[in-house]
Image (tube, rainbow, N blue to C red; front, side, top):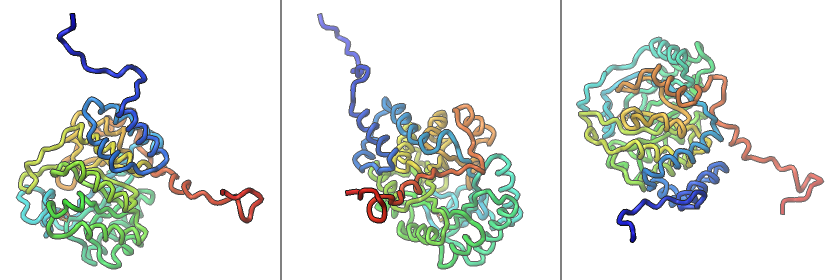
Length: 372
Ligand code: SF4
């Protein structure tokens, strides 16, 4: 007599499933720094929760191949908070925000330096100097340049990244001349969706500023925010748009829904969704710093340690207008999960990019046969 109960189909050990094929193609491609196809990216995002640990393990192999078990710590200094004339819907500092955040004008360079020094003492390798606003005036750039120079005077080997919004001609070069290492400006979401999250500037404005900063010799840092109602196609679109910018670091943020902002009631994300997005970014940016950024505590919750198998950098301490986990708790999480804090003397990015340029040692001008 046939049993009335059905058992779930469990693949026999060694059986090759569609999931195995997808993950093995993604891992193989990423290890050779090949960009996945859109179809592969969408298929990864569509995997179910049963496959979650397989997805994390696969992307974790790529993370370890390029970054070992090192975690780079970044620290945010909000040099000017709130009262922004722009209307980014996700932002607690936007025009008309009712969020009860701290609002202040520029902090003194000495205060920024003191905060940076404390963060470096706690293990931060990069300090991110951030200010609200559409973009800096030349006077603002002077102030930030002084701050950068003062931080570098005290700790020459700390990386300083600046995030001041849209740049005008000559400003990026002045920041670079002052010793800034990087410029950060997120694309945030897919180009097609940008007007849904901001009406006062465009996606193209943001891309332009990243190009300007890169052309001035600043290391480009650009990422996105998820949990703003985007579809899988939108996630993939912004990821590919970021890929086009060839950034050195990619912060992956999950929306912090501030009451008093237009997106204050959006709690769309699950920890599993966050992990799948992070895995996608690891496959798309195998040898680039993928940073677990804002919103990790509230959306990943108890699954945060799994995210360390995907991202190779995190923010330590508080965010711009909301509080993060206590630094000691994050350091304990990193240790407990089997990772180590990256030292300032260590190089974050693998020498991979240089290795991709193989100088010709065969054919014309040599005794060796040509590559034909
Ligand atoms: S994200 Fe930046 S530009 Fe947009 S509202 Fe916030 S501070 Fe202003």
